[in-house]
Amino acid sequence: MIFKDYYKILGLETSRVSIDEIKVAYRNAAKKYHPDVNVGDSLAEERIKDINEAYRVLSMPTSKRKYDRVWNSKNLVNKKFNIKGKDSIVKMFFGNVKQKNDKKDEEKNKQPLRGENVETEISTTIYEAFYGLDKKISLRTVEGKMKTFTVTVPQGIRDGEKIRLIGQGKPGINGAKNGDLFIKINIKDNKKFRLQGCDIYTDLLITPWEAALGTRVNIQSIDEETKVYIPQGIQSGEKIRIPGKGYKDGKGSRGDLIAEVKIMVPKNLTNEERKIFEKLNDISTFNPRKE
Image (tube, rainbow, N blue to C red; front, side):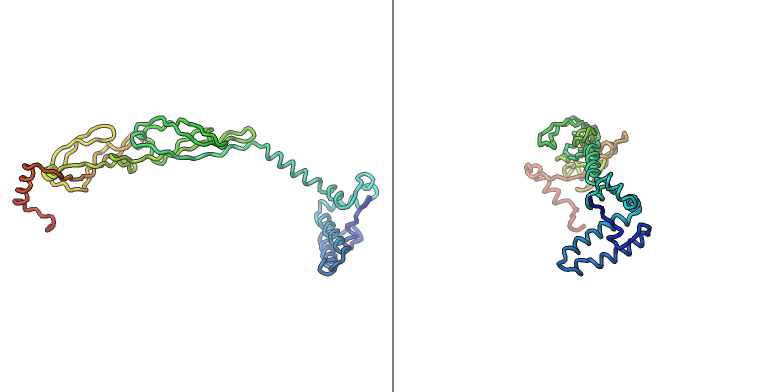
């Protein structure tokens, strides 16, 4: 049976010493038996290990008190605990650290852990978003399998908004809840309508004579046809705003329909049309190149 006298290893004769005195004794002993000073001396290498071990135990008040009880009743301790070398005495003072850590890790691994959220995005047309619909999407799960979801896109959802499907994310661990699935909605423009905020933009195609004389025309909004007035002399690129005929704003109101004027010139003229344009060319005083 081996009991290491840590005080003797550090060159101390009694346990009634302060932590500062232990630190001084440790520095002196470590300097004396340092490997750089005792090159090739295997005994010095073992000695420095014992010195480090002694310092670890005696430099901490708690472990020092435990060791002092053993040191003051060495025979009793040897009989009860069968201390064998440095591993046994370290275990007596600090317990089986590995087992404690393993137990903590095991307990940690058993703790419920909510599943992670999953995010994806889908595209929908401006009509689908305006009126709402049920849309099916397929996603690949963590296990690599494809799963189909039915997503209810509510009427008037805004571009970039997210729909949340509770519990459709990654599975929870140890009985915890699953994460959620968040689906970002991207509203795509079509050939007729362009969405900007709550306003809908569209092109209003008119003839040169309608632009020159002014007129009333029917224009199609997203949900109904509306009659608008075209003022005399309107130019291409000018905009006509029709209030309350745009996209839903989520507060019970709607944005505006904004019609951008595009004056269209006929490509194929009849003989009569050609004569009228030729006469207009002869009598008109309007010349935009000189304005």
